[in-house]
Amino acid sequence: MSAEIIDGKKLAITFREQVAQEVAQFKEQSQIVPHLTAILVGEDPASAVYVRNKQRACEKAGIQSTLKRLPAETTQDKLHKLVQELNADQSVHGILVQLPLPKHIDEVAILDVVNPLKDVDAFHPENVGLIVQGRPRYLPCTPYGIQQMILSTEMETAGKHAVILGRSEIVGKPMAMLLIQRGLGADATVTICHSRTQNLKEIVQSADIIIAAIGKPEFVTADMVKPGAVVIDVGINRVNEKLVGDVAFDSVKEIASAITPVPGGVGPMTIAMLLKNTLTAARIL
Ligand SMILES: Nc1nc2c(c(=O)[nH]1)N[C@@H](CN(C=O)c1ccc(C(=O)N[C@@H](CCC(=O)O)C(=O)O)cc1)CN2
Image (tube, rainbow, N blue to C red; front, side):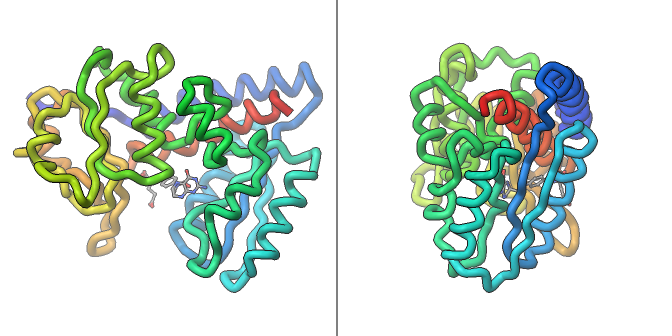
């Protein structure tokens, strides 16, 4: 039997419509327009597309959006000062520094400067700490979107084995924190696999939920997947001008109970969750 395809594009539209309604109510009650400012440094074409899509999504939801575009040679000091200015600007509720930053910039040092109340990506250590403690202020956009996609399936996640491939700060680590949380998360048993993991194939074969976020095209193959598993593909790899995920979609969909496509899976949900966080930021501030 072929898997349910979790349509991230469709689910994201539902979330975006819901946020647009909440934004309209919030504006009426408070006379405040939620405002996101994105910082894009350099000329990475994919990042430029993602930021443009975020801006469009904001505008459609009634959220004000501003883009601060800086050249690739921008210094650490200049970027640091811009973030400080945005921290002090009372009309800005959410600040987003698009990643990756150019190599000469210390990414962690910049993310540490963002006011945690305006940190709609939830990358600041204060927000990460709150997530670890199970009392999040914001949930990071990609794991938050994935959580909603898993909730949309029929799987009862409590006690299930979730295997995450990849230990990044943006996806792997925070995803693990969400999946283990009681109530607000999935109540799952979580394993994170990475480049030094031994017996990776056997571990993945024991997974009820697989989250693939390692940036290796079609790494997860059908022989690694337990029948009925839910498979979430976070990978966006360009191979011969085509977008390919970290999962061999065509063969794995014959084994899994539910699977996300690439494109049209996790990506659109990441943007929808950013809108939710920006509204939360406007409410908090
Ligand atoms: N500050 C941040 N930087 C980055 C994040 C993030 O959450 N915050 N995540 C990724 C990139 N990203 C969001 O910024 C992102 C990636 C992909 C998509 C998306 O919709 N992808 C489409 C395909 C689009 C394409 O043609 O490339 C899809 O999957 O359908 C949205 C957001 C790294 N940086």
